[in-house]
Length: 482
Image (cartoon, rainbow, N blue to C red; front, side, top):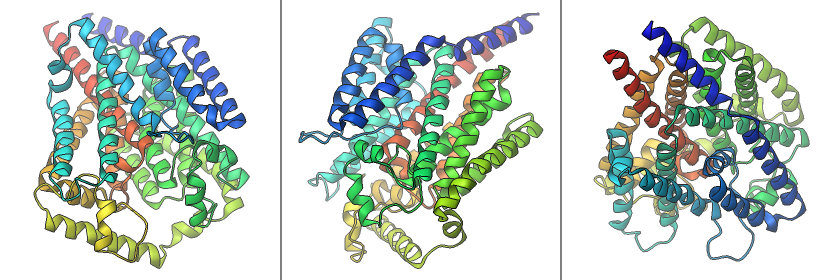
């Protein structure tokens, strides 16, 4: 009798969390329309269209502010004005951290409990500390460029602890997932428009004016979509993080409209993933699908949902592919320049590691120092390999701490998948799918730090896993006592 009541309360709580009322969706919709209109009319007004309303929202309703931040994760515009700091959104990631810190103080929660309690939090803090120390101890400590990578990493950690401190109810965790699905559908729809229009579009270059020159150097539109992100490979990585959450919602949720939302997100994200023509991203999607079939029960329904979403995605993507005809050609072969450049970049990372095996050459230094080993590549590039670049920049110590921590997060996700609570199972498959996709894609790319949109989303998912694991552990203890 007690177990039945607990299961009923869990189901009700999940339903409540996913139906937080129409006010949040209405406000976010108004915000999205207003921002888009202002960007189209005047890109310089972006600072007022985003920063000022967000600041006011933070003062009036911090919960709504956090939801808006999650919704706007794919947006990372640069302001075209001559300011000392153009990366306003990076600085903005520390705003929620400060707000949550204030709320934690009011609740009497100590800084140590918030930032250090539990091995998962310790792993995040220790890796960030090692990254900073590796740079300060390196020969490149006087170079400005690597400090931008450190700033990104610290902003991701700020996102992690902001969500850990804020998402202290199951309703808030469920709301984050819901907002993330809605936001990703918007990302996919804009990418479809790019494919249909046969260009990155004027709106894209209003958001990121500096990127026009970058793509012009690369030959302009190549048929590969970016949506609101900087690069097609980054978009592929971003979509692969959301896809397992959408799949979990479809398989595990009972509410019809949430399942429709999840399936819509799953199908559109899969179609957009194909249109990126990212070979690493598509292989990573295969890893997510296999992991989901292995872990997610009922398995037959999981397989059916994946197949149905692929069919819908094909119906969306194939007509759009016909306008560019780049996807099939690119996916069938790897050109000589790509092969040679990747091998050269990987070799440079290996040499840098051998030169600095303990703490590495310094976090964020690879793209500025690899030229001495590969002088024929002029552009500042990452190594296109998560493992080699982590070794090259942070050495054995940083590499070990990072991947041991990621392994701990994967084990946490695997435990959550076995929970009786549907919400924790959704978070579990989400974090396991995120890590599987990132580690597979990381064999041929390094979007972990390079893409702020992906970086913020990745660390947000880790935060959801941390908080969900705490709740799930408390529920198990209460069930044993009862």
